[in-house]
Length: 430
Image 1 (cartoon, rainbow, N blue to C red):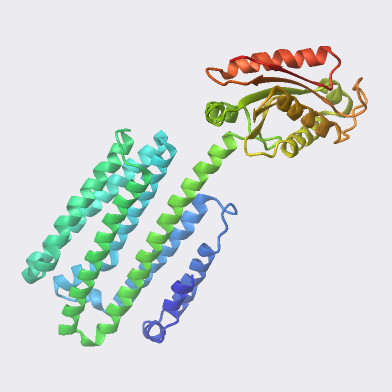
Image 2: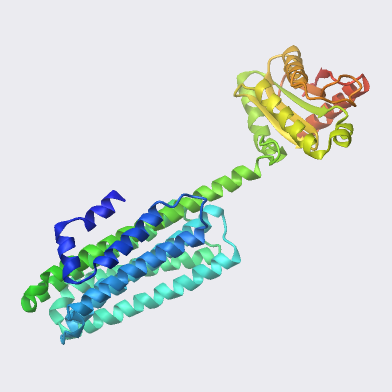
């Protein structure tokens, strides 16, 4: 933001603003940019952010057209000058923005694994628009070559390269709509960035040629070219910055959605899906470290009575406190805890012996009882208690999760049948 404002505070810029009577427009566009830069993630929707961004770009373009009109440059009779201006202030910025949009859309689709049909349709629509813009750019450069053959030397090579790289990128984009791509999101994003950088080089070459032509015939309008260069350069800078920001926002959103899918919304601890993800890797670590695995199920005693007595809201609060007690009891890197469903939780930990496994269960049981959550209908204690069933596998070889759940569940029911508020642990030979 500081870098952006610096351009508007130079004496040259202020002189040009007064000369072309656009001081108010400069103030307005600065307000729009500050509003966009100061937008906090989550306070407005992605679509509203993009609308603000689009409005800002459109205001930039309107300033360019106003300056061109007030300088009478658009009335210039020589076709080369007119079409060089068309390329510099309209076609190249539009192409940059269009490529940035499909770069962001395509990168988001790759990051998600595969886009939805609506996203594919939108990407296909944007690809068609960019393709038409490239054809228009080719027609314009053809006119310039006919009007001024000497201009061909600086346009022909860049146009050929641009067409080659641009068409290649569009073909890659089309493959996303057909699920035939093999690029990573980063490589795809870099491919799109290469096209935009080539457009930037062509833009600067066009500006240099335009400056030469105007110096020959319109010396007094030299400042106009500098003004156009600054405005268009800032426009391209903002396009690049926000297209990258949108891509990062999409990537961070995908990561947050993945995190939420692995977390129980009530207790904010991992859910059973996360257990399925880490189970095999934890078994392998235990095998490498020469340790065993302790797996346990715990159930809140007489929880239905608790809900009937205190209500479901209090029941949810009690489950959250139980989850908190689990966190406090299991703080080693090799300790895991999960909400299994309803009033059931489970634990997974590395242990060296059955005694250590049982001690883990007893520590959890005692910590939860010490929370002193009132439970008048609990026949074994006046506070909330839990029963635990734990199986200890000393030599991890081919043990599977379903088998351990079944064995731990049997121990849990044994603890309930023996009076609840206790932990029963057994050794399970793998």
